[in-house]
Length: 57
Image 1 (cartoon, rainbow, N blue to C red):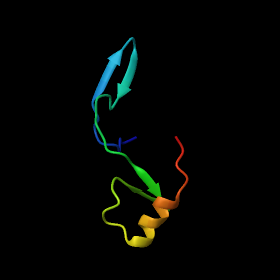
Image 2: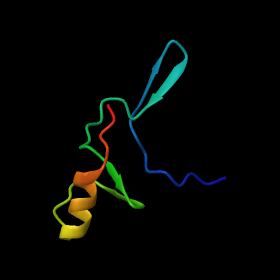
Image 3: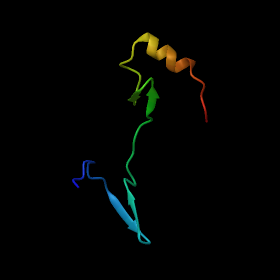
Image 4: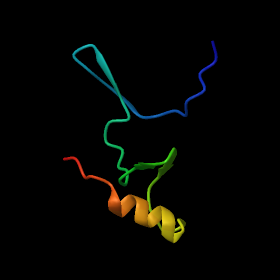
């Protein structure tokens, strides 16, 4: 089987492989099926939808 995912840094500790440890990322939001980091490309309706959502946390 061919690996499709990009190569991520791997760390092995105590026989356990940790993948992607130490990578930084910005907040990822799911808004009506789209995964986005920022809302700057969304129109006013999408921005309003995000603002009206119930925040869990």
